[in-house]
Image (cartoon, rainbow, N blue to C red; front, side):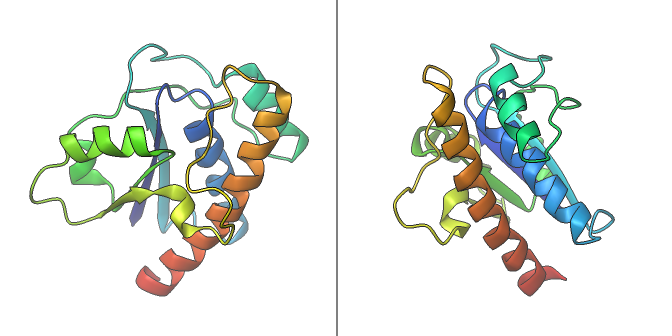
Length: 157
């Protein structure tokens, strides 16, 4: 089974959105028995909390359910479990690179590298902004999720 972990700062906006959307894509493709999806944050402020209500509402309008997700903090054990560890931005990628054991053989990088859009390299954090920020996150995540699914199919399935 291929295992994918999405990582942002608090695990209540961007990474659970990526988790929920990619899970939806995996289920639509009939690959839920071949690909496992999870999300985590580099910080510990929101452990155990559901995704931000604004993230949930924006996702729900597009047919994605994030309600069952709960925030957790990324740990060193994740590097032994996950084939793909995908950061939403460079700051979180740097934190993950510092945690990464020397023997990690998986893919550690920016999630949007899998997308076709060239206008963003990082998923902007919508937490302190307006509702349109959550819509932008959905647009970027949907694009990158399609590319990631293609990559997984080509490399592993």
